[in-house]
Amino acid sequence: MMALVAPVVVTAWLGGTDALAAVKRFPLDILGVMLLMAFICWNLNAARLRLMLDGRIGRLGQRRALGIELTSKFALCATPGGSGGPATLLVLLAQRGLPASRGAAIFLVDQGCDLLFFLCMLSGVVALSLLGETQWPHQTVVQFALIALALVAAGFSLVIAYLPRLLRYPISSGGRWLSRYRRRWLARRLLTCRQALQVTLQLPVTTLLTMMMLTAMHWLLRYSLLYLAVLGAGGNADWLWTFLTQMLAMAASQFSFLPGGAGAAELGVGGLLLPLMEREQAAAAVLVWRLVSYHLYLAVGAPLFLLSAYRLVQRPSLLRTSAPSQPLNR
Image (cartoon, rainbow, N blue to C red; front, side, top):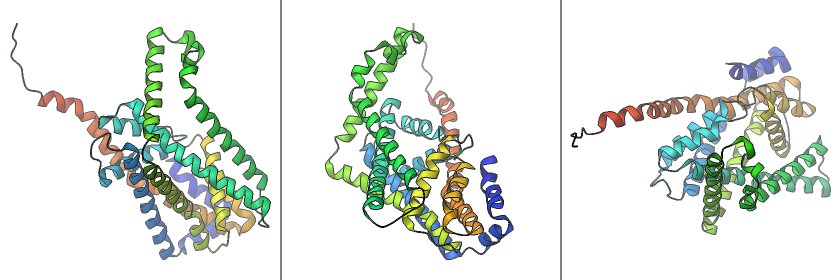
């Protein structure tokens, strides 16, 4: 409830009653385009999931893949720091026969595609700001974000590449805090995840390029929502700056204790938009943007999440009732 109320409270605080009035005047045609773009983004992610799985859980149609996408994204949006998203994805894949360690590799590939896309985008933006005449506010923050993202990508790659060597050190496998059995159990699953990651990265080049193309299309559409919200609220901002605004604000919102970074995301985006437009326009744009990019995931994904949870709870009882009775032969 706090996450649902936070955008309205922040909007009223930033822009007052004028911001709420601007939201009521928001053009319905632009809102319809934003909703259509959100629907396309969901399907792009579902198609990317099908490519990453590559038939490892049998035939997965677009509708079922879309159900997995929306269910896991609901858990991502409904938990602090998005901690419930990966766990829900692993459970859904495990229900279809993919072990959690291999499901974790799928999640890592998904995150790796996103990381590579943002690394390329930030590199291009920094090069454009250094070599061209375009100037944006807070350019130092953008450059630091590029450095941090590059360090994260390099660190992740090194850990995956040298994982077998790292696991030979007792401290990396739990040291004295875990028993020998638990250390071996953890090491086996980490190595299985690494192997599944390698198998996924060895897919045909065309498949990998298609995955990256779907990733780029998803984020370009997803991060264009704020630009449309700004136009609908009567503001005027550069598309590239709205893209950077969302990327920086959403990264900062990971430190919020509320689900979906509620409060921190609105304040971050609103603060970065204020130098370019009126206060009430920025507040109205932020509210509409959050309704489409965050609350819509909650509204659509909640029924699917509850249905998946119900099936998970009912599965043991269904297995017990459907099991045939066997005669006792001794």
